[in-house]
Length: 186
Length: 186
Image 1 (cartoon, each protein chain N blue to C red):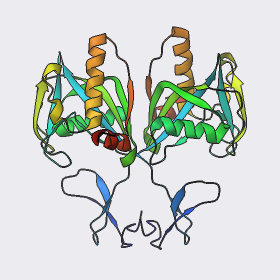
Image 2 (tube, rainbow over the protein chains, first blue to last red):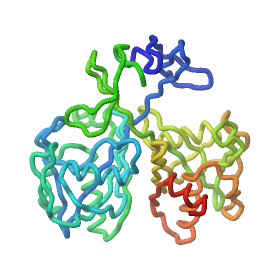
Image 3 (cartoon, rainbow over the protein chains, first blue to last red):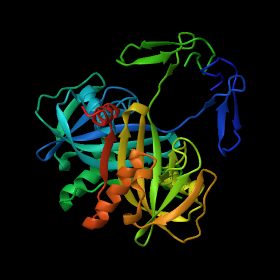
């Protein structure tokens, strides 16, 4: 961020009186430009004992499988966003069942909120961002081809709930430093 | 938004190919400036059968009571944000117990995520944004002086959980149009 989006003047990053985090601040029009995490909303579409996954047609993680999801838009609820994304990526007709995961990813400033959803019919098909959409029994999930850690977390939460006969909401987070250390064998 | 924060050129709002929502777009450097909802994180600090509320020292809703909470910052998890806000507003020492509410407010593009938290000691005091911080038994909650609908929703969710001996997560949303119609007696 180099220029003020309100007046076009150059901006600086500084601590504003009363705050303790440096913010982008325009000295000309005195606007503070806050930067905050984004919400990613998604759902696990369910049909009987199967779940619908989408094979990604776009980067990041092109060719990997995921649950439908994406950035929440202004003017919608989290549930509406999750349904919109499923419609965009898999042309689904579904209804939200319940919340299942809230998952923070600190190093990219994201919160992933995931729901379970009931497929109301089997008239789904790949949207423009998907190469393929397909129902999987939990035992068939291609774990090594899952696109994102938040997706694996949500799928495992769902399987655990099914096994335990629960509808528990699971909390989680991804810690990049911890992941790097584990990968390097420290 | 009038100017590109990357290069300072004038920007327009237009539908970008492959998208279906108008975005702020810079024709000079081709940056798309997305605008997305913000996350507000908070918690209900609990001591035995009492909960800690803060009387607001700032607008909006100065003088009204709320649970500690505020905008989630980049580089933190939702739980860390909820604890940070409680520390800022009530100088608490607490630990997160569990998620209790996820509440969307469409007309201001916010998602409020609230946790229950255990007060580890009674060494709390008003932070700079609070006039007073005080423990309330659920029967003593000043419902007509609660600052925000998301706070009322979280407090009612907590009371319901206590009454039912559950630790359920409650979903909700505030619909401004519905609220206006109900208020006007339609």
